[in-house]
Length: 274
Image 1 (tube, helix red, strand yellow):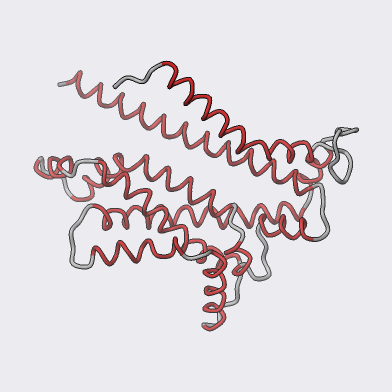
Image 2 (tube, rainbow, N blue to C red):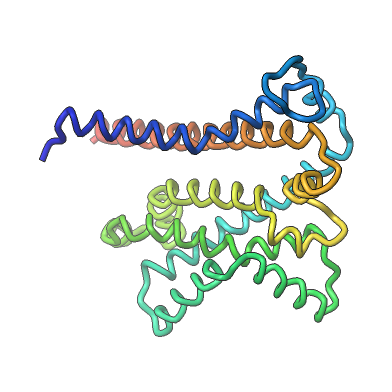
């Protein structure tokens, strides 16, 4: 049934209001980052971008960003690999303990992150592993890899297994089917899972707090500065982090669009040849 004009207007208005309410707090953070005063007060008397210059030149900020990037990138890569093969086992194949596997793979999502972080810290200490940013990667994976698996599984449930069977009937091998059929069909889910994994790891505070040891990630530093020793670099780094997240999402959407255009172009060329 087609949607009436009044219903569409109400839905658009509702969506705009929700987005406005979600991003309104970021406006105050943006103002704080360009205020010349050490503490934010309205109206802002003097504007300055010096805090952005200090953030770029600060060796501490550079070290924090490097650590957070390494953790997020490694978590993203491993989560995509685990999510891909886990989703195939989760959604595509029938085997004896499939139901148990489905329950166990989703179990870490329901644990409070603080409890999970504390449990992992105690486990690392019991086996003699010194906490560092590398143990933070493991901790993030325990919580994020199941989410990536679930996201890819949604995509795996949506395409017809007959496509793989047709390729197999035409003589394609297992790796050829995986490369030419399965991977392209799951690519939107893999991109989405990668984005979720990166952003969840980049902004994760509870797990990082318990498992980074002497190292420190950006969320930990921001929290420490908010609790004691506030610095105007806090809102500045917050704005830079949000802008970087938007750019990452835009890059991923562009990459996904290029893949779709290339696939459509190849399909059109094959149809012309036939």
